[in-house]
Amino acid sequence: MPAVIGAAFLLLPLVGLLARAPWSALPDLLTDAGVVQALRLSLVSATAATAVALVLGVPLAWVLARVHLRGITVLRALITLPLVLPPVVGGVALLMAFGRRGLLGRYLEQWTGYSLPFTTTAVVLAETFVAMPFLVVTVEGAFRSADRDLDEAASTLGASRMTVFRRVTLPLVGPSVLAGAVLCWARALGEFGATITFAGNFPGRTQTMPLAVYLALQSNPDAALALSLVLLLVSVVVLAALRTRWWGAGAAS
Amino acid sequence: MLAVSVLALALGACGDSASTSGSPSSGTITVFAAASLTEAFTTIGRQFEQAHPGTAVRFSFGPSSGLAEQIDQGAPADVFASADGDPMERVRLAGHVNRADGFASNTLEIAVPRGNPAHVSSLADLASPDVKVALCQPQVPCGALAARVLSRAGQVVHPVTLDTDVKAVLAAVSLGEVDAGIVYTTDVRAAGTAVEGVPLPSGTNASTVYPIAALSDAPHRAGANAFVQYVLSPAGRSVLLAAGFGPP
Image (cartoon, rainbow over all chains, first blue to last red; front, side, top):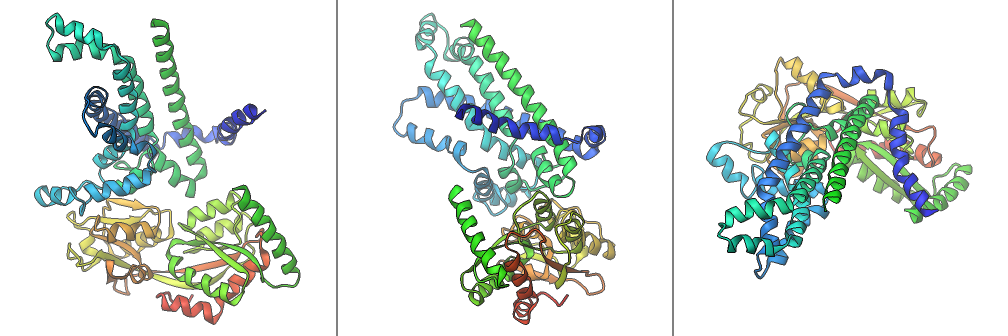
């Protein structure tokens, strides 16, 4: 019985969204220039955030999994903090670091005249801050469980460290990197709190889909429902992609 | 959460028995109010609680249009105070309000961070590409009013952000993340020393009248009426005047 209630509780809101959706007005609502703009900004910034997370996060995951130094567990705990930190706190923290009067942002503005808040770059940073730990945690687990004997065998056979990483380690953790990237992308796409706090809200520049949904609800609930449907659809697609990957990985092993 | 609703039920029961005698002597009154009323209403709420021992006033401050939407969706509010007529009209058309009374008015001012780093002295300065400006989004009263003032002044401003309510604009200004924002006169006063105000010429400034209403489906009807009366009373008005609001 609790299982039924649990499932119903999770499903009913989605049914509500579908039931109340303004289906007949949907084409008009979704082809609105503002909606297209917000969707494009969301897709671009979430993809950029995932790219940054891959470039910085995979090496970080490797260090966390393979380097044995004092303090590495503390580092791991701190790095995964954004996983549990309320995103709006992340936004405030980003302002204090990269804002015009922030630790780093102050010098950035002094030296270059450029300030980060309220730019699309700020959106990408906010999303990366919140979403990268998902990738790091997923990939770190894979590095940990990947068979190190294979790495050592490759080294013994004369492969350089870079070749070992590229030809042996990376293929072993590949599926996890992909799964981590998808999780990271989905989390970035849904980012709200850190984005509105650090990047503000301006259509076409920093107003991503979640912001557009929240703001539309105050003036045009039908538009908010339409936008929500789009995000729901994207989520279903992501989930389907992830499942196919997991099934694929399951079949391979 | 359950404990809270049980408590609310218990308090509601007290409130009902009190309402038969027409006195708001106990219970919790929930007031949805425009963000710009935060300081004034918090003070009024405290005074009201002292005048009516056993009564607690709880506030939800936010953008008027967002609060109107929450009321439409069945949020259990007793009183609604909006920063202009539109959100109140929306709530009235949906049948949640029978009558609303204007209780205060407000005008706009430019808020700049302490020291005015970008040397803003007029609306024309806001149009400069070197000046980062925050405005309320046009769907909320402060944004609609700012748009009216800017068009009156013949200035086209390209803000870096359109905030959800006036307090968010004020926060961006007081943190120094923007060089200027257009907020209510009362907000500049409420922000203390973190921001400075640049008054607008009276010819271009615009004012808004704040309506307040007890909701017809208020869970605590007697308390709702008593609170509205208190806001309209000389005691309530003097708090509003002290905060910089004008008469309605």
